[in-house]
Image 1: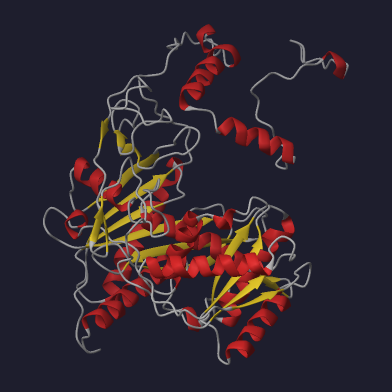
Image 2 (image 1 turned 60 degrees about the vertical axis):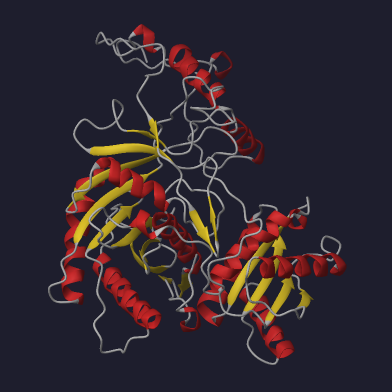
Amino acid sequence: MTDDDTSIAWPVEFCKIIEGQRYSNKKLTGKQRGEIILLAKFKPSMNEQETIRGAKEILQLQNDPTGVGMKVDPNLAKVDARVIKSTDVKYAGKTMKPNNGQWNLRDVKFVESGERLEFWHVVIFEQSKWMPKGEAINFIENLARQCESQGMSIARNRPEIQYLQYYNKGPNVVKQAYEDARDILGRPPQLIIFIIPGEKSPINTELYETIKRVMDTEIGCLSQCVSVDSRKNFRSPQYCANLAMKINLKLGGVNSILPEDKLRLPSGEEVLFLGADVTHPKDKNGKSICAVVGSLDNQAGRFITKYQDQERSGKEEILEIDKLIKEILREYCDYQRRRSRVKNNEVITLPPCIIMYRDGVSESQFERVLRWELPKIREACRWFRQGYEPKIIFSVVGKRHHTRIFPVDPKNRMEADKNGNCLVGTIVDKKITHPTLNDFYLQSHFANQGTARPSHYTILHDDIKLTIDEFQGLSNTLCYNFQRSTSSVSIPAPTYYAHLTCARAKMYLTTHRGNIYLPNVHRNLKNYPMY
């Protein structure tokens, strides 16, 4: 366009695309995806240099591109930070002291074994040349030994191994695998292990989602998928240890716990920890999935998951969060009765405090989500028991931001790890935070590759009146009890579980006669965690 709005056409051969523009096409080729992943693996120091270069050469901020007299510092902002100590992680008879957010399972046993595993079956959706039977037997025996060494109760009998082909057979092949397992065992299996191809492809993704949907909602049997790639990753002892953590969790066990004094408030009051998330469909006709997760004990070892669907409206609010909170409170009381062996008519003491870690909310939606969900939570508490009005902290935790923190001296082991990232537990709560909101950045995890992204916490409402240091310490502690990992994670465990619940429930969505509906988890799996 010219100054007088006259259109001028130029041959494409004379046009150049300015570097740094966002690519609008959503579908990338495999090569393009590989290049993006390669860029994401840049060491923090290189990422820092590229950020500065982009500001100078692409955005040209030093030249005042807005024309309003703005001056931009050519270097990154320097801020004060501090590091919170790691939280001890307790196993049966042993306490692990994480090193930069990491520990291992060597010579430790899980806190509590799930139900004894006696009746299980193995199905291999893979050609025999990729996973010969001898190799499969060796893997299953190694897995069973690993489970036993971690303290799980498991029978020594080797399960039957069955080979099947998936292709486009859909749910019928999964149902047939279950029927075959039941016939071989002479009773319904407790668990079926599905060994599936590990390479990312639409058919393999469809296979995994079909297994979970059919097993969780139609059949009602626990399942564990094992992805096998061309590198034979299943041979690693660490791989078997990771599977043991998942299997024990599925069977109702508890892998690790946190010290109770770390999870109690300074006043000594107990807390019900909540995590919530919403995931939206890609197409306009789909449905959004909402999930709320609540703690069942004082050591944040057990959580109950609840989910539901709602019409996709572009809003982030969980419209019926009160319904999910009521169900969580009911499950909390049921668990406490079973644990304490009290009679059904005895009243269970409810936690006097609730702390919500809400995921998936952008800053523009803070006020709207708070105004809708906080009154709904209060209403659910009053409905569940007359006079139950707990003190509530409503916070938002997110990772969808572009803030990165770099150590001043990446070679100094007092402020940086071996990869050049800030140390696990680094907190920034000044200078780059919101001018009016109570927020901070916490990097609670170790990044094996690339630049670690800190999580952004914002406290929107606080009845408990914790100091910012107390809330930061509590949030960091909850990142150390994600039951499927031997390292701290980037967001508190309840928020992580809510995210996983949304992802799993999304697989359950079924279309029948043009209508989309979300089935419930089968009644057989009611007392087992979804995550």
